[in-house]
Image 1 (cartoon, rainbow, N blue to C red):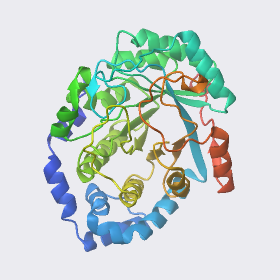
Image 2 (cartoon, rainbow, N blue to C red; image 1 turned 30 degrees about the horizontal axis):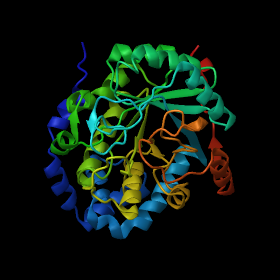
Image 3 (tube, helix red, strand yellow; image 1 turned 60 degrees about the horizontal axis):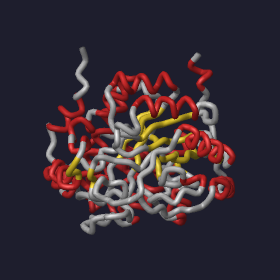
Image 4 (cartoon, rainbow, N blue to C red; image 1 turned 135 degrees about the horizontal axis):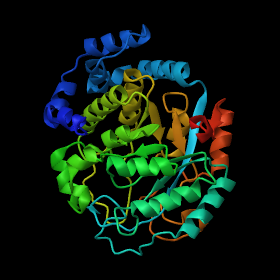
Length: 377
């Protein structure tokens, strides 16, 4: 039987500190060689990717942006996928010091009933959303696999595509949700730095870094159509995070070639009880990391959420991004006026219709639906 910890084995072959040193040691010549490959459409290797992450590559940002634009247009055309998150619960038994849902935070807790889930679905559908990402905290007794399954079967009536961003599951549990109608898995590692991971995850199942790290493998084995990964930028040195995030994305695209792989670079935002020791990732670094990913893995889906400011999101259209969220609410019941605590503060509060208009004004086609389950019959 095939192992499900293969990326963990690869991960253990690398050092976070040495990864940073390797990136920082890249030279202008390394960067120019990588960009030359990109211009000639010669596939990158991992070392080329690391060169574009290096501090020395800052002076090549405009060239990286232009090449990223070219590759994105070749692979994806002038289309942008739109989705919306739907929070089913803010109940959580894990303690993550950066999260508004963390167990220690004395906040009103709620898990939506299936009737309330359907009410949220109807509201989102009326806004024009066909792709939904459902999220929960890590309270397994309140948001069990059976509960998620019931919610998905209800959401099937309203949405063409359903993804999950919940606590990690076993392969057979993922298969169960696929059978119910889920086609995408999003599972952010948060941080690939072991010391940082254990520092900020102090209670609950989320303390098990290895089990979470293996989650996308289990999702790939289960057969998800989409696999989404990401690192929460701001917890540890971003160079180390981008090293392992690129390594992870490269691994998944090779191992689970039937699945499309998406990467997100969420930057930490304010939340109740939020800690103060944030490693700042400036806009210039953020967009450079996106460009590096695009030039490294040309077919990679790149996601930018409403964590980012409208100005930045608008100006990234066409430069590498393929998927954006719209009209987001980060509390359960938020689309119908719930005042429960948000998981984090969003920066782009525009409605779905405003995002659609923005895309059309830029000459892009907002993709509301790109998949139908009838194709699987």
